Image 1 (cartoon, helix red, strand yellow):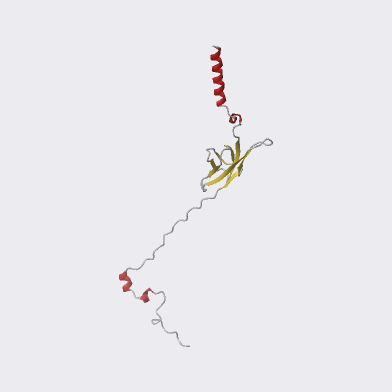
Image 2 (cartoon, rainbow, N blue to C red):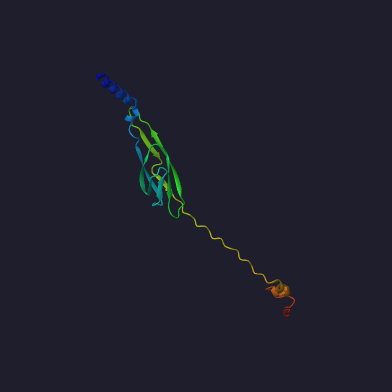
Length: 155
């Protein structure tokens, strides 16, 4: 019976050692707080990681990857700003650091310009062909016919 207990303890001990790794002792990756702002303020900001808020605000993002921030506001063109996350591993004398560039992330939104209305060109009305043929060119002219005007008196 003693052999059975020793064998069971050895099996449990070896099974526990196989799942033990040094990664277990590493802390979870820290989150970085990123400030989000827009010009004009009040825009909806949404990160590519899923967080969203109305500017000005701040969000916590995991440090594992870079992301982008998309800004939307009525009567303004949408804007997307990329954010680069950089992780600097620590050593024995300094702790690990993670930075987001840029931080704060500011999106300058451009107003949507309204489209200019298209104006139709007016067509000039032409006299019907029969009426144009009947009237003389002199009758259509705003200037009097020089042959029909009297000569000025001599002085």
